[in-house]
Image (cartoon, rainbow, N blue to C red; front, side):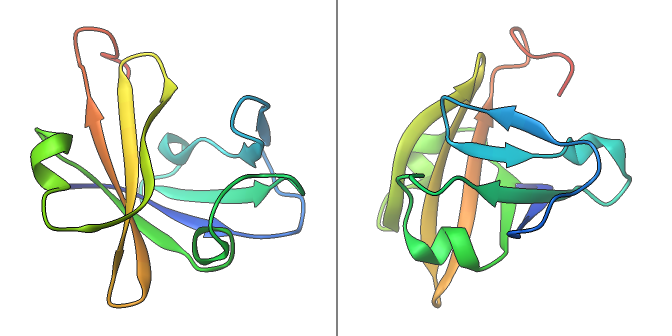
Length: 110
């Protein structure tokens, strides 16, 4: 696993907002700072567990998402937030953890 970002939920506005209507969330670019900090504001009708919408999560890039999910408590099933990226959330010791698989041939920018 390789650290990718930390997602911090907020109800406030923040600099560099990017609306993602298909995900019902507003974020900033976690690559715009050297620490991978990503602010996240979930829309009122966002279909995610409260754990994800209220507790910060850490995100790790994995080589094989399917394998990384074996024997884990999956709280958000694998989905594709953008081309070349597949993500899922698991719960570990009461905290949300995001796992990402990135196809670098499609996403060399990440």
